[in-house]
Length: 459
Image 1 (cartoon, rainbow, N blue to C red):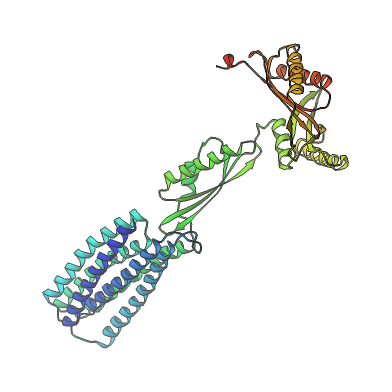
Image 2 (spheres, rainbow, N blue to C red; image 1 turned 90 degrees about the vertical axis):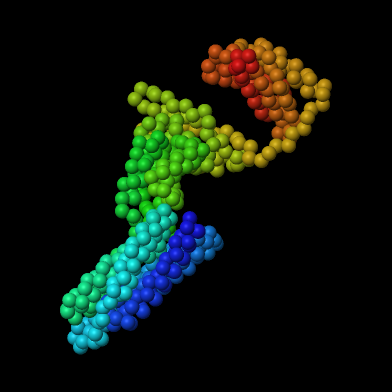
């Protein structure tokens, strides 16, 4: 894209330089203020296009530490400089034309060469402006659009100069300064439009209709509860869009990341070349269960909970759960942690809710374990296998591991259960086995029983 912008800017420089030379020569030979004004206009175009070319070279540089959003606004600054030059040129043309109307001046000697130069200028500017507009739209370049706007106004102003020359040919001596006035007015009009657009770009004015476009792109998007805010503005030759959306606070982080990616993709489809930043806010949805809300509150306070049970007792609701805290913590500190969590749950669910917590020790630091001597391990393994066979719904105890730690024995094992069992029944069977192991094997500290259907049933 940058190469295309540079090529069209260079071609515009050469064309403006050629027209400036031709108009200046003919203007001096004929004494036409209108043509001289057009020469000044073309000279301005040439200088402005040089400025545009330099700005394009700079704006094409990638973002760096000092310019995290890139160098795109350099083009807008160049366009603003062109606007200032337009107003200065217009002021001079108006002054010269007024002086000639009031005090008279050089007698204009129209010629066919002057008419030919102006006609050639109009044709060349027509093709140049079309090419510049095409590349400006493709690359979203404000500097090239400014050049195209100059050329479009130049076509009309050249036409007024021709009309002025025609009036002089037919004996109306004021036709030339009047044509100069017309040129100045067109230049002022072009400068006003260009300046307004450039200033809006520099102060990050939101493009018209951008919020409606973004909201339309996200309409009925799954898991987006609402679009909270849309902000957008020009960023160099592109558009920057900041979108804030609300999503259910129970969604996992991976799903939230997918939602953000999908939001950005949909917006980029509607706004080609846009740079999109998406922010998500957690929202309590109407379909949240009490279990969801308790887990969210506990996670926000950094307290692990499990075995959350919700009971409906007549017209009241009772919530109980196991709360894990550092096992080496004092019971008074643990109780304050539990009470703070219970108060927050009361505040969220209502004072009429019954809340009960059971404090359990949580091992924060890793425990160092060692393997048992083979003879002792085999005795414990055989005992566990026999206990599992004697427990309803459990069979084939395998992958039995026993570690000796300073806190006691850590035991883990897998057991097969019938695949048609519910999770609750399988859990009860595992709990029964844990109790049997604790009663039979002295010094057992921790037991993990993993229940699973046989491999053939899973397949």
